[in-house]
Structure formats: C-alpha cells, structure tokens
Length: 357
Image 1: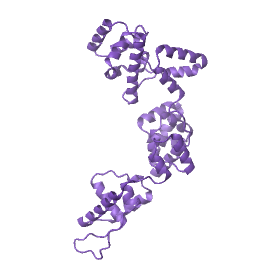
Image 2: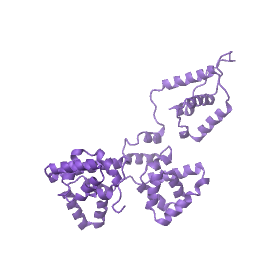
Image 3: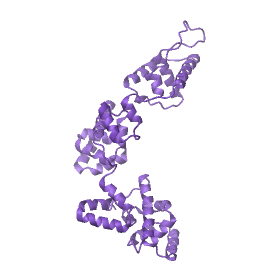
Image 4: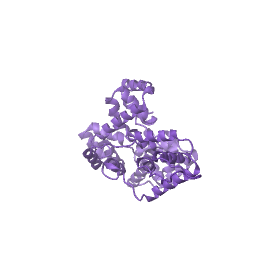
C-alpha cells in the first residue's frame, strides 16, 4: 500500500501559497514528496518493498532522493500530514488487473482455475520469480537441471538454498553434477538482470506444466494409505502388488515407514527426540507387543538408545502388563509412526533410506 501511495499514485500537490512566508512549508513536487516519505520511513526502520515496483518508478525515486539535501520541519510536517490523510481516505484496495487478482487469490481458488484464467488473460505471475522457484520441490526442479544448459543450471543451483541444492546434485549423474558444480564457480560475472530473466523464464516454464489432480505421486499416496493400515492389510496389499507390478510394489515398500523400520530409518541419536513426542501409553503397548508382532529388533533398538534408567523402568512395565491385543498394538505403533512423520514434516527429523548407514 505504501508503495502505491507514494509512487504509483503520487500524492496531490500542496496548495499554492504563493511566495512562502517565513516559517511556511516549502512547496514540493509529487516525486519530492515521495522521496521525503520514503526517507522518513527508512529512518524509522520501516521495511518498504520498493524492489517490487517497476524499474522506472524505482529510478524516479532514486533520482528525486539524490537531488534533495535538507527539508525543514514545517515542510516535513505538511508532507506527512498529507500522506496520513491520503492513507485514511482509503477504505479498501484491490489488486490491479488479472495478474494481481490471481496472486491475491492464490491458494483460495483451485490451481486448475488459476492456470486457465492466467492463460486466457495472457498474464504471468508477478513478483520475484526465484521466490516461487525456491518453493517448488526438488523432484519438480530436477528435469530443469537435466534439460537446461550447464550455465542456466548453475545459476538455478546458486539461487536455491543449500539443502535443496545438495539434494538435487545427489539426484544427478556424476558427470552432469560435476559440470554444473564447476559452472557455479563461473557465475561471478552474471548480472542481476540476467539472473532475473533466467528466473522469469524458468518460472514460466514451470507454470506451463499441466496442473496435476494430486499433490503427490501414486507411490507416495499408496505408501501413506498403507502406513495407516493394519499390518495384516498392509502385508496382504503388498503381496497382491508383488503379483501385479513388482516394481511398483518395491517402490511402495520404500515409501512405507512402520514401527518395524525404526532401526534402519532413524539414527540412534534421534530416538530421545522421538520419545519426547510419543505418548507414554502408546510407547508401552508398542514395546510390549513388539516380540509377538515380529518387531523385537525395533524394541531393542529403542531401549538401547534411551537413557539407562528410562530403559530399566520401561522393561519393568513391559513385564507387568498383559500382552496387548494385536489391534491395540497396531494402534499404538501407528500413533508412534504418526508422531515421527510429524517431526519429519517439521524438519526436526530426517528419515534415512533403507540402505543408508
């Protein structure tokens, strides 16, 4: 709003007072008033997203500020008062054009509708293209690194956060990864305008891809469903998938995380963190029924990586309670898995792959 008021819709001029009387505010142009307001807000520590404005307006503002030296208190008070009155007169502001409306409604209307309206109007998303690119998952960015030139790939890799860039490199063949990594060392002379043009091109390329009906792939969806199923149902479904499509079945197995996967998928140092999020009642039932369910290795792994006193106390409780029913054990282990998945989604825990040491 501040941007639009001070630049896009310049403030009206001060009244023509003729020759200024002693102590009267000096009459300023609209651009000069904008410079005064911006300078005052910056002095007060306000964050003004001036970079979102068109370059022409940014240039006008910079030149206006460069031409000014000092402003007396009466003039400053008059400009601030006029600016405040302009702000108070605004009741509601709408984004300009279809592009602005689509950005305002992002997440509120379906992706399919947004994409159709964008194509019909012939507009693209506004704002910083790299901010949108950085929000996209690594699996969707991977095709760009595989198909674009080494130089473009190096620029994109340089704009991503370190964790995502490392994940993408690990997905590439060795020679390709080495070429892109070396090209990063040659990006020092790339201009900001070139980086922005590359970002706009990549953002348009990504937005041109057809919108899928599901947020995740079939392997992830089936894995999530089987994660919440009973062990009997899960084993039966996987057995059926083996007969129909063994490759898909193996991929689903890798996507599944159960109580039995804990020793292979969770680092020993992360067990105390997991136990802090797990209901003690679920932990006791899961541990007590682990041997009968063929998951004794998981129970021992947990006991070995908790404090000695807590492990001794838990062993005593496991001996004192009656063997839990299979259904109760399934519920307890499912609750534990859900707690672990929440830690993973929050970025507080990383599940290792089955073959990772």
